[in-house]
Image (cartoon, rainbow, N blue to C red; front, side, top):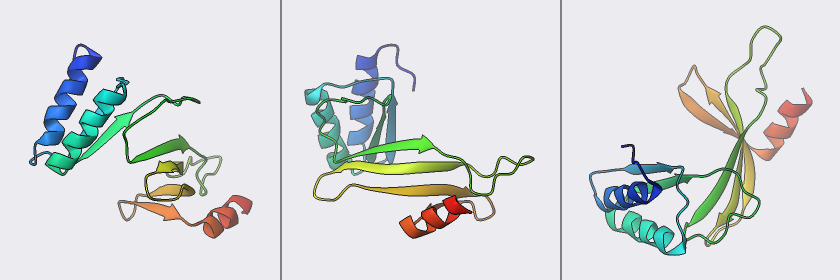
Length: 130
């Protein structure tokens, strides 16, 4: 749905997350305060779905109730050439994980298999040198 105001988007996201029939909710262009973020977290736990909050990259994002915080950024494909851009590729960083450790990976879309391929650290280094 498209909400006219960020507060409406957060309300709709909370309601959607509480519903066990909805597997995932994506919220864009809304920056919840800590209370609203906690409400979203509790709603996701109640409904059993996943809530994704897309935000602009910010050096100081402020407090959040999220279990994890990720950063995704585009990177050059390993199979790119002057005549072919290659498959979509990303740098994937886990910045914060409650009860876990941060980490970084490289991901590439494998169009032949229709899946995301995550490269390990050694594989990423090897491909970057080639």
